[in-house]
Length: 370
Image: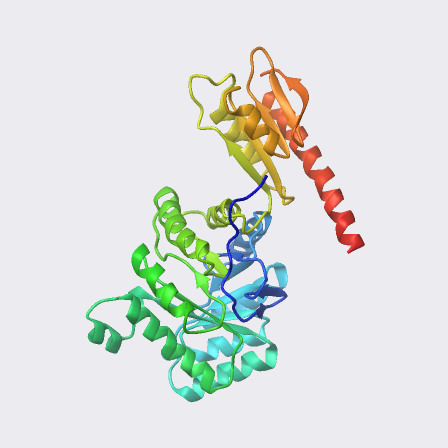
């Protein structure tokens, strides 16, 4: 399929978050955050493993106490994904997590306290090869900035970020990324636009406290979609009042819709209407759940009738066009076989998995030759 436009990404400095590259020409990474009690190691590990199964690239864990820091150390040993420790106020917690294998520290240098404490944290990060995220949030701006601007504004968010950036620059530390989150889409978008012009470090995108699964997905997709279309953003989190696994799924779906990531199955499906020759909605609900473990990039079209079906199916790796009495399967743009509605989901799942396996084998062969 020919795509009409390609997004030209902002050129940012590339940093490491553990083994993961962030920024530069690295793929935009999808992040989420645990919502379990960190000291409950088993529950936290279980949640991270579910996110890993969904394909998450980075996981942030809140570490509010020394007890939580020790638990974090145990968690680090039991999961594979790069971990970010979310730390506020107590610099000693940052130092301890650095010893225990953290990949990135999410801090605001301003709330860590005296500059000598920030210097200790940065020295530990340098020594251990740990990156830092400066996380600015409209809900927790410094009091002097609240007084200066009267209320959270894009300019206030950017000034706060640059203040923290200055801390790290003066300590000759460049391995950091920055976020300027707000729950208001317009404020967040404008803050990121302004900041993108002033620093070279990677930007972590997010619409903070976006809302529940449906409303938060819409709000995040609007705000982050605008920025991503403009080439802004190197890593992102969809902040939902929902299961963190859903944040991961939405994040990848957003990137897939903009052709910025191709992990997993990309479904093209009609909304269904009276022309449908099988239950499109039920079929899609079942298929999405059944094949969400697949990581091979694959375009699959599920169309209920012959009006738009053949056109969409021919452009996909595998496509289904609803017909009467049988439905037509296309593979790589060509008619391949016919199915009835009996056991339709089971048959489609088998075909999708076979096609994914064949495509992955081809990709592996190309990679081996390169």
